[in-house]
Amino acid sequence: MGYKRKARVLFLCSGNGSRSLMASCFANQLGASWMEGRPAVLKKQGHDSVAADVMQEMGVSCDGGDLDELNEALLNWADLVVLMDKLAEAQCPPLPHGVQKRSYFFDDPAELADSAIGQLESYRKIRDQIKRRVEGMIGGLKMLQKASE
Image (cartoon, rainbow, N blue to C red; front, side, top):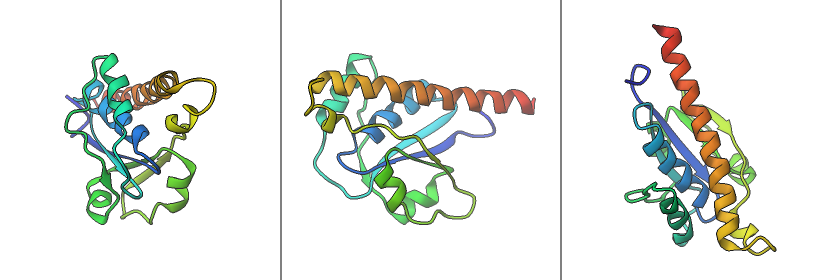
């Protein structure tokens, strides 16, 4: 069982939402006892199916991980807002009282795909970085519970 209740984590990025989608899918699968993740973007754009495809390669489903455009209800729902890129940090509105904020920046895999790396490799690289960060967040929640026992 998680610390008191599941932490509600809103993963926010600009652009296509691939980073926030991957992070929320990891949070909901790997950290299901500890956190509930939701993906959001500053401004809704087209769907990025490559992110879901590379997640599926690892056996992580992103079904039901619809991207929401940032709104007041999402901010009020969250315990923690994780800003996934510098633009999201710069344009994030003030948070409600008690909502914490963290900045964990990741390159946009769609932009990296235009380089020599290639599309699938760029998404896999960012996916793996996001997975390590989410695993660290889960570890922190486990430590909080241990300290409270």
